[in-house]
Length: 325
Image (cartoon, rainbow, N blue to C red):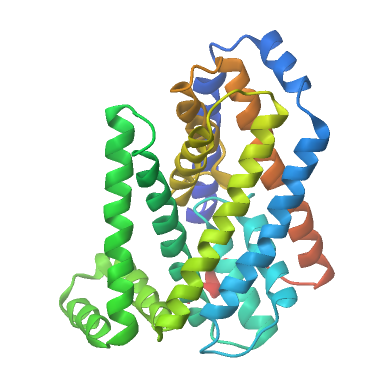
């Protein structure tokens, strides 16, 4: 009989299979392979290089968020982030974020919950930045009503999370309130309160406006690099869309990936790209070619580099349950 962990993994790969079935069931395989083979390899390689360089910007942001714990160097933080992404690429429900915190705790001798909390804050800034970019595009392109609803809804959610993080950064009241509710809540709701407490403890790292602005600025730089990757891959396949089209692709894919239940967001990413490009009358087979190569350009090099680094460091990432304590 499958354990709970193995059942989750099996279920996630079943979801991947179903998503890819629906994505590919009506595709013209010859036309898809034709578009796939026409990709400009130097431009694809440039996209891969930009994506990997962006990890140093991510490391700069993480350094800011960890400053209340200790002083760390960007070159030593970057491979830890890549390792977390590598694990996310092969295991479901973003387990790589937990592994990243555990690796940081082991290597840097810091609190794993504190490192984990800083990752939560990163994700809030990522979500807020993406939601703001998507909302801004609504002023430049007449999107369908469902896309507008997605943009405003996502913006509202992450704006509220951001305000909650700000209140936690400058006051202990939110954490005390959550702990009070926890003491009165039923046992089955404890994971939700664990999440809230870790998030609030991570938000405590934003203890000055300088850190908040630095984190937001670096978040914008991270997503500027990501956008450049999209522009290069789209150019590599000769897709003729306006600049705003790449913004929509970036936002749709990454908002979907934030809560994707599948390893590396497989199926979710491709579906988001296909959906985003539909508004620009790009042939379906060409959309799928862009989606497949764009995703591969991100997950293949990070997975290889991340696991090679984990192997060289002789790190044991198998004990996930002990990490979550």
